[in-house]
Image (cartoon, rainbow, N blue to C red):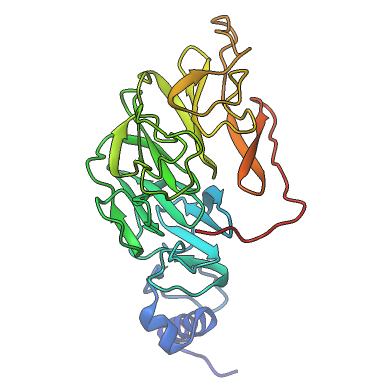
Length: 315
């Protein structure tokens, strides 16, 4: 039997491993590493190799918009899929894709929220970046220009969570305040701005805001949601819930159908005993035409309203 020098075996083993992982062109573009990079294998011996690829990471968050969805990975990347007519996937194109694609230069995301035709993410430095449709200032950069890649939201530096509605967005801040920006046709920004009765979305009298404004009367919020409709809700430290915006179907939960641009308390959600605090709340809307019907989920359950006759809504 012909003997082979151990060094030759090490070279052959490394070459075999590299060939098994990827072809030459892919390897040149890959960020994967092999450890140990150099190893000597004796005849009859074994050697364990570890391949590390920082681009392979488990999901830690997911969100669904009207026609697109996005995922946050453990390594801080964000990936989106689905409809992209307004750049809501953030991949610097406007082409629909049936598989998750990386959001352009997004590497520090900790949370993400998909709205109607835009998306927002909160980052590790507590800023917020948004992308997609911006006709009503829902990107929050002070303009109404559509953007195909993430841009910073003006003035947000202490965000811990973000929520995107159909045409507005909100951020929960470290001090318990909430700031919102974008469409304010139904008072969904919560800043107390006058909303004329019978206002049509996008009318000249509608007071939108392309930069964040404070939600009045909210200073102890621990969670927010706006998924994706024309109203917003916040869970407070004491276990109560407040909502504001469109209320045509009673989705604000205050016992009326009157829309409001200031936060109102949801009925029947009282301050719980200290031994049993409220854990979480999520509002979801189903729509028939242009109005919304509220659907609520408790701490240990989830409720998602399903569209029976889905139709593509206007921007």
